[in-house]
Image (cartoon, rainbow, N blue to C red):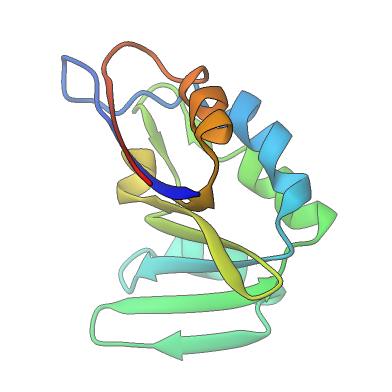
Length: 139
């Protein structure tokens, strides 16, 4: 078992989110809850996610929402990739399974972290990304 860090930026420095729908279509059924982190000034995103939240935590510049990962939320997250900007609409998504952080998506989709995955999982995840993504897997 190991941890995987992916830095996903294209040559033109826009983040490429083509991986998002195929990867998350496969992975979302595995997760049981999610923590969404938004900057305080992202009022549209805050209003969108707030009705789903079971827990809301306000920090200096961030607002964090924790909630069970329902089918409605899964659909919302699948639709969050913006190919025009090359980003996701969420600053930070922490997907969990039974309380354990499994997948962290940071910087609007430019960085991903997978915890405690097998080498076979790593190779499979890698297949969703283009040549510009940088992978660091440590067992």
